[in-house]
Image (cartoon, rainbow, N blue to C red):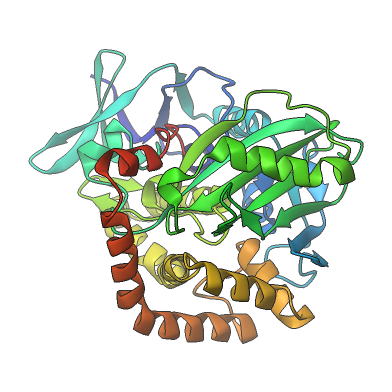
Length: 426
């Protein structure tokens, strides 16, 4: 019976980061990924400065990635192009790096420092007397001192551990594809904050164009389930209408592949238990205000490996406490905000405000770039705390309105609106 200090379920950015950091610290670790090596994960491919800083800490070179200087935000006729903060704690640039290459670089880095990676092999946790003691994988039983769940929020492993998305919290759906463009080498991500569905209803979400520097751009749209008419939202049509909006200015070619959709879990009922922890998407660590979570996946992968190296018996409880202190308030604010902007009139007013002045646009930039968390000092931190207090008062009413709206939708349409099955990685 093979035994490891740590077993990781999933080898996306979160799982690979955990395996790399652990192996580098001399921890005997195996990561199982049910997809084959080199698989492509549907994603926006954007890396925030926060993600770049985490990759730098892991020693992963971004020479193959396309560097990004900032974000161009569009709300109606208002356009603001802002650089990432030069004096921020995460550095002055982001990147676009297609997930096939990013994930391969992380897995190669993990293997190079001694981690064992098993592709094409699904691992499921073994639970004995309420404790995770290892996994079954490839018809074999593996034991471990710690099981790390990095396989998304809705897969079988998550269900077995009870680390599911909270059904009372919002989630998002997104769709993306690629197209050729002569503007592929631009240094700014572009986000259109004013989307409308086929009926003209304002969509709480955004359309994006992320130039990849390889002749193509990643184009896609995302939406929150708090919007009016979500059950009838057709992502393919929404993506097509957004493409029509930007095709001329970006000189877009036809789609290079069929648009692919995925779900964005933005909560988790549990993220740790006896013998296990969840990281990245599996822990619900996705910013509800931009749908991004690669940086949180990398950070929590690094964190759990460092804590295990320091004190293996205490790792689960310590990990949960640190993640709560660092992220919970900000992500809670984002989820509350999601219910607020589900109302079209509030959404329209909010978008005008978000880019209306340079000062507020810079705050929006920090939110869209995942540059804010519970530890953020200064004005941004104070605004976050004030927003959380205000939204806390409004949250019960907003949730009730959302529940009433959802209750009027037939069960079959609610199920369809829940979207495609999530990918099994973080």
